[in-house]
Length: 106
Figure 1 (cartoon, rainbow, N blue to C red):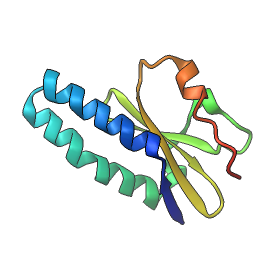
Figure 2: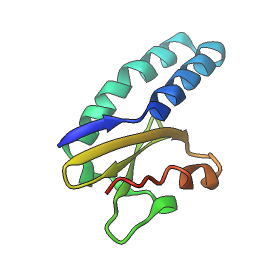
Figure 3: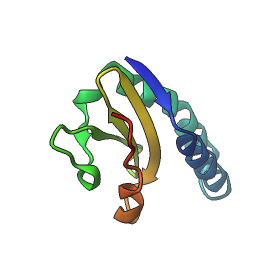
Figure 4: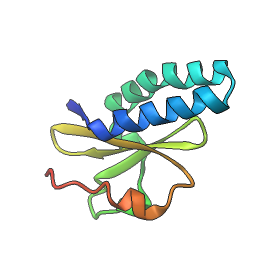
């Protein structure tokens, strides 16, 4: 399955890392950064293992998420031959923000 990572995901990662560098211990920031690749690899290996994202629920369960470092969700869409990494959001994010991640790819 081919994996596509949206620019929005990388922009969110950048913003999170800037915040963490200012507010969190250096070790946490480094662990956060290193863990992203591992998390993406896990999603790519078995995307259907992860829960359906309730804010983007569909009959076929296209939208799913991996809970990352307790406070974050990596939200992705699973199509027949394509895996789309949409964004990473804080678990306390306004649900309206998550709903805006719905895409037209089929």
